[in-house]
Every structure is written in structure tokens, then in C-alpha cells.
Amino acid sequence: IGMSYDEIEKRGIWLPVSEYNIKYLKPALYDQELRIEVKVKERPGVRIIFDYEIYNEDDEKLTEASTTLFFLDAEKNKVVKCPDWLMQLMDKHF
Image 1 (cartoon, rainbow, N blue to C red):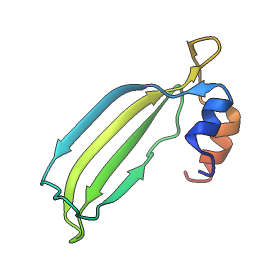
Image 2 (tube, rainbow, N blue to C red; image 1 turned 90 degrees about the vertical axis):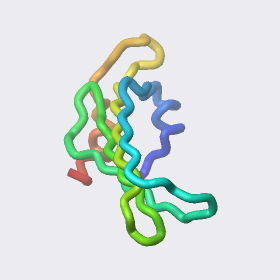
Image 3 (cartoon, rainbow, N blue to C red; image 1 turned 45 degrees about the vertical axis):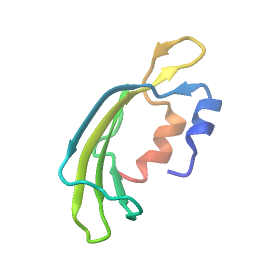
Image 4 (tube, rainbow, N blue to C red; image 1 turned 180 degrees about the horizontal axis):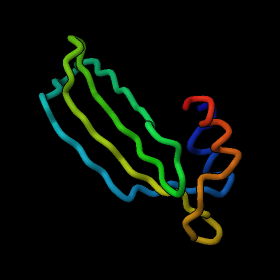
């Protein structure tokens, strides 16, 4: 989206993982080059869900996964909605 995770943290927002799901379909092998596709299917509110698919060099899907993270105001240690400045960067992709 054009902003690093480090920059998001410097602006006072942390994104702790609250849930992680993974399904291994086939093994990846040592020295194999992998392609990881990441998608956010819905606009975030207080949480954001990332869906992942991992493919090998032969374009075989090896893994499906998802992580759920929530937006946390680092100073107040309180769950918040996705900040407007971050939502503006993400809106271009929905």
C-alpha cells in the first residue's frame, strides 16, 4: 500500500495478531523458490484479515492461510478502528 509496517508503528498503531489459520496442502522443498500471494478481501474496521496462498515453482498451491490482526493505539493500549490516514492508502485497492 506504499507504507511500511515500521512507519505504521511510528505513527502509534500496532497490529497484534489475534488469529492465525493455516492449511498445508503439499510440502515445500529446500531451495525451492516460492510465491506468496496476499489479499485483503474486505475493508478493515477494528481488525484486518489477510488471506495467503503459497505456490511453488511449478505453480502448485502448497499452503492456504489467514491471519486476523486488530488495530491497537500503542499509547492508550486500546483497540481502535483503522485510522483514516491508513484507510486512504488501502481504499485504492478495494
